[in-house]
Image (cartoon, rainbow, N blue to C red; front, side):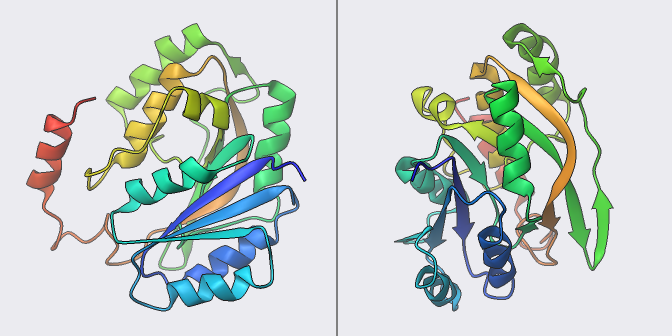
Length: 240
């Protein structure tokens, strides 16, 4: 069976949320998918949870590696992905049953290399629906991407996440686009801006099917442990 979408899921100590993520992926209405879980050195029961579902569904692929960070985990998934398109889901998030189908249908109809949907943010049980940033149902050309979308990444961080998008696998692999290893925060934005920079076409849809969970104490919200000066230096020293 041809694989339309490779979904890459980095996992690090997510035993409290992982099962909901897996169940939402296996329930997708688009079945021609593979689900690549990259266990990034978890020391909890995350690996066992993935293995229990892998025994029931052959579409699940499990990669175990030493803890190297989310960028290295996603890059490991990209390296083995066989799908026509790439999708990224975080292991503590979940999606609607038609999430992948909506993205894939719009990709095949528009012939766009990148499809962008909206997403929902869940924090302490409250869900916020995000709205489209650019005009929907319009095929953006390469020149429009360079003039309108790429500069947006420099000015704003509202579109940084890779998780609400579908990327052409050929676009990513032929241009050797990867997530920057060693960047503590903001690795999504660096990957996504590269993808748009090299893309000939992009298409935005007004659809909210991804649920991003802001977990108290997570990497982005742990203000006590985060060294923001170190993060700033990482971005300053990175060879863009």
